[in-house]
Amino acid sequence: MSEQFEQGVAELGKQIDARISSYFSSCVHCGLCAEACLFYTETGDPRYTPIYKLEPMKKLWRQEHTISGKLAKTFGLSKPLQEQDFADWEELVYDSCTLCGRCSMVCPVGNDITYMISKEREGFSRAGYAPEGLKGATQRALEIGSPMGVTLKTVLATLAHVEKNTGLSVSVDQQGADYMTLFSSMEVVNFPEYIESIARIFDAGGVSWTISSKAFEATNSGIQIGNSDNAAEIVNRVVTAAEELGVKYVISPECGHAYTSIRWAGPNLIGRPYTFKVIHILELLEQLKQQGRIKFNGKTDEPVTFHDPCQIVRRGGVVEPQRDLLNSVAENFVEMTDHGVMNWCCGGGGGVSANERADELRAKAFDRKRRQIEETGVDTVVTACANCRMMLEDGIEENEMETTVIGLTELIADYLVTDAKEQPEVR
Ligand code: SF4
Ligand code: SF4
Image (cartoon, rainbow, N blue to C red; front, side):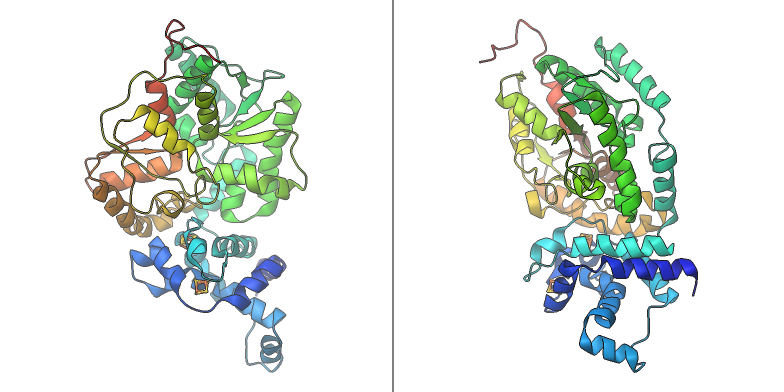
């Protein structure tokens, strides 16, 4: 048994808090969580039942926290965890879980299975049992500042293009700006139109904003791999930059897990509250609209549907702004079945998209999303997460669907009133 494995088991033991103990002891083995998980519904494989993904942690809990488990261990009736257990479960813990939170919504006794899987990942990653893709992404996030290896030089080059295309100037490191905005690497590399859109919207809405040269990356691979120390370091980078600039708000961009990481997990990770508030871009756009600071000119007559990113909606609590915004710029917004907090995951959250080994399984799981989209009868899917967008585009291509995917912020920017003469009075 390697020293690293022993450290992993010790870490797994440390993660079993009162909450997890109560979850394990209250499970009634009803199996309802299976029907909520796209990896189970799309494969029929019982190993993908959410609670089953927690067997190694459950074994340790029994042995350390129950009388029967302690006795069984003492008399040799229950063997300690072996490296093979971790090797066997690694795929279940990482490849077949996007931390989407859907299983937690249906458990009749209120077990937050997603929280439990995040905690289990802490033990697995410490033991070295994590996918290579996620290990690499986390290392790049710590060493370069971005899981995709995006550097400040690349960001500045993208901003120069944005300035050229919009005729607007984008400030970097502006002391005392109201808002500091973050981007996901995927936006910088694959969807720079998002950055262009917020530049145009913020200019129209008179928003005082800046970007930090020290912390522009929103994503947090430490959360995905399950390493709280790494996650805290990544959060701290943003917090330090925001506090140095003296901003009032940090804007989380169109990225799912970035939002839950910085808004909900962040203060616990660093052990203190922030001196600023975190706001999701959709919440800010909705506020600007409600305050009359941005207005729209016309609507698309193309029918559209919306894919709710799990971490923004189900785990993050941002449910209505996107609907109100969408109705402002689209004549015909068609909801998917199981929309909002019960929406189905794109299949690539929780680090699954960074894990090439999971590609085949992810493609199978996408069948749920394919059916959801096709049932709407609509050819345009709007979303608000760059990772979801990549996963949707991948799945659409693989399934040869005639579907277009766009970001909500871009759609908003397309219908924005930018001419000062057309701008309605702000009351
Ligand atoms: S969090 Fe989502 S992907 Fe993970 S086990 Fe639960 S339902 Fe399945
Ligand atoms: S839904 Fe809840 S109670 Fe039922 S098997 Fe899953 S974790 Fe246990």
